[in-house]
Length: 333
Image (cartoon, one colour):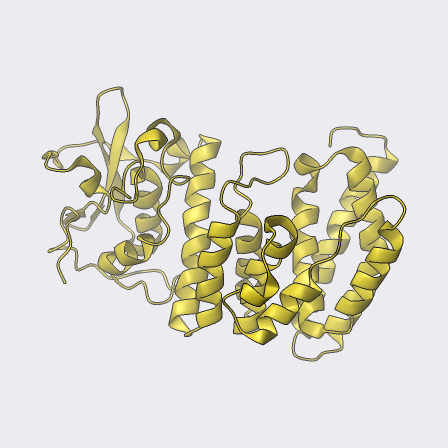
């Protein structure tokens, strides 16, 4: 197979990292990024011009540093008009540029250019967030492909499209970060069941995107988990009854309890900048009320007991931190 990016013929370097299974060559990474590069990962100043047919537009720096993570070497930059640098990679004596196609027929000069450093580039918070998005997507997709997890692959595409345009509360961070983080959390704990990973990715699409459970492109087991993880609308009058029934149902299913605990870990980690004080207080109370029972369910399963101890540690640590701030009357949330 032929490629069009600069240096592809000589880019025979091998991965020095095992973080992304199946990504052994720059060509493997290029193929994987075809499903990940998007308008969001494009540099903000260039987004108006981003198109599916020119996926590499505005992707250079975050891609080059991801290449460096996997293959080593250095990142260099070609000075462009306006003072920005177009980033590319050099590993040993091999020079290649996964995002060169954005320039069409223009010939770039890859000689005698200054080295680029992630500390400088990632001082821009939005650029670091776009880089982290590439990593999360690649982590989930490469793990799923290597293990033939068809539901996880389909769920990644489906959730990414379903949450398109949605952001986390009080931020510009795409909502898909949250389900991707859950899937990455599961993988980090060596949980690789297809139905669990798919449900991590899809757990909010019924509630937040108005999707129909029967039309989800995954197995019945994964669908059932997503349904369990979805609760009806609440108000001040019915919230207690709705949440009691919701958590009681989850506690009857070990996998649903496991996913819900991972979900709460991520929500506790991010709620200081995403929620108002009154909502933080409600989440703390809800966590203290319902999650000890869910953690006990996961612990006694045997299969996920190690994960349960890690989840309990994170949940209790976050609760202690928030409770300490609240007791001291700190109002910086």
